[in-house]
Image 1 (spheres, rainbow, N blue to C red):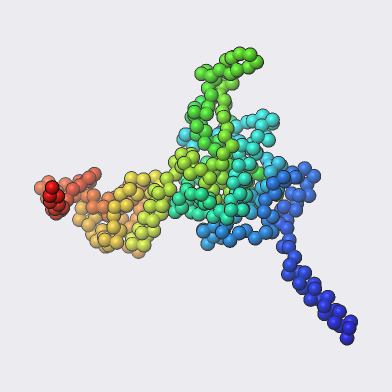
Image 2 (cartoon, rainbow, N blue to C red):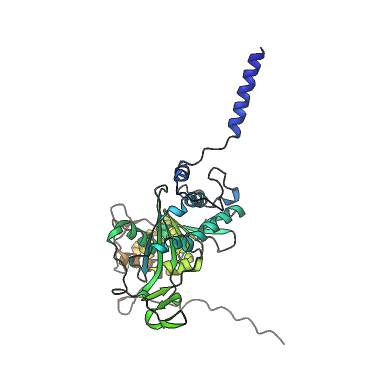
Length: 386
């Protein structure tokens, strides 16, 4: 009997021990730690097996594909000194160039591009930082703004260019290009233990660029002509991180300036697309959709802001277009066919009642602006008595 009780006690102790055991360490981090060159972390981050604080769970957590920024920081921290770095320059028209750099600058890459972001994320995790949708959140303390890469057209195009063109990207040279046209620089970081490379983007203000023909340098005891074609002051501040299909915004003003992305406009565009799709049956040419067309037609988004999309029904809109001789095209299911941007212009102009038929001449005009003549004028309030 004593033997049975001892055995039962042993089993209970094993179960209790298994309940309190730590979760197994991420395999990627074990592999990285096993490498002889692996860095010793003087400021270790929260271990990957530790649960993320509840306050640090993103408000967009419903999106299962969202990059866990805290887990990302842990994985990158483990291989920080072993990362491979490629540098790119992007001009004002979002053309991409490769940029060579001296081997002595490799350590500076991590210091100027990566160190600040890792520090901000790790400090944010300790304070309960939350991740919120950039289109809905304000730039405030304790909030890291996030958006999806496909929403930011210029960012998506640049990253696709880097990934697809690779070694075929033209190298930047002072002989063939002008540094004054450069808008931002992108550092691409990669390591075999990371699932995907990530990108850190920095604005290049021309105020921080020294031109060779208009700058001096002080050497020894006196000034000398600036011998380089251009010089650049690189600030270590955190600006933009692109990891997978996610964009994390650490500096809203610089992010908007780099990629010409306006959160308010984007939010309105997404809202209006949803309203149109809910109230009208549209059919698009292959490769097109409403969101893609509106990206290039900001004037239409501005016009759609003023339209009540529930006021005019589709049948009435089609009949009105026939009366004006504009004849919207319909497919076999009665959906309005949108073949290109001109068809979308016509559709939105009809919704906004921008076409006027003259009873005098019989001609149809597009009204760029209009003022109702039968609109009641607001009554003026009497002047206050003295």
